[in-house]
Image (cartoon, rainbow, N blue to C red; front, side, top):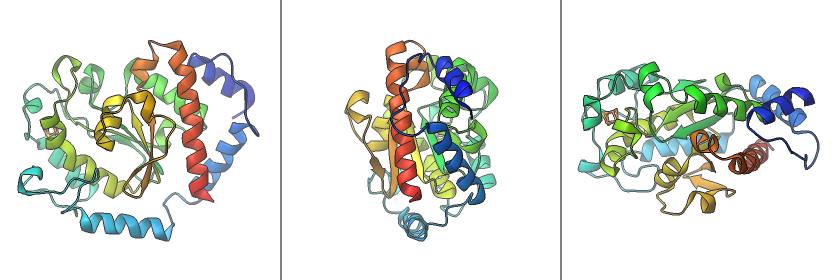
Amino acid sequence: MDNATRLHYLEAMGITIWVPRQRPIASEAEAMQSEALQNPVSQDVDYLQSVDQLAIQAEHIDLVGNHFNARSVPHDTLSFNNDWQTLQQQVAACQQCSLCETRTQTVFGVGNRHADWMLIGEAPGQNEDLQGEPFVGKAGQLLTEMLRAIGLRREEVYIANMLKCRPPNNRDPLPTEVQACHAFLQQQIILLQPKLILAVGRIAAQNLLNSKQTLSSLRGIRHQLHNIPLIVIPHPAYLLRSLLEKAKAWEDLQFALSVYKELEK
Ligand code: SF4
């Protein structure tokens, strides 16, 4: 990506002033992309072992560190050996919480199933419910621009939500709904084996990290979801309302990219 193109994307994000810290980020991102394309599936042995271990332990400990018990595993038929297709079919048929009564369709997730980057939002909104894809509409377009600003195409990452069905009137998800849907997200993470997770927005961040801290206090930190680094970024719908926050979001993305590059060393 040349400098003019990058500036175009930054402008699309509402960021008109930007000073590069080190060498141009585009060249870093292109190098990263090239390497990722040559090696689309992680060959990091330690990492793969940790994910295998995670899958083995998944029946006992979930990804936010809570111990499972019979009640916290909501799906009788859910196996941690599911493939993508089976999992998607189970989600489409799910009636584990009352959101199944008001959804147009489930919103499973979209993107590259060998992606290094996984983005996790909170729940489908109206457009997502209608189209069956996470992060569409204006907020989705902004998210796509944000990714492109750091040299990533939307098709290169995997995008999912904690909840697969839309809460009515876009209200916040209830804890019972998050719990009911949690095993699906957990399986997506196990199947994908991402190198880096971006928690998109406060609700996703707080739930994934099992934290009540504010968004601003969770940003700029390399969290861990077990052995997977997790970075918090603001929700694009929030950014659409605040120019100042867009500038901060750019810093979050740069931080995420720096964490990813560290993993590649
Ligand atoms: S939100 Fe999740 S748990 Fe609830 S009905 Fe939809 S897929 Fe099932």
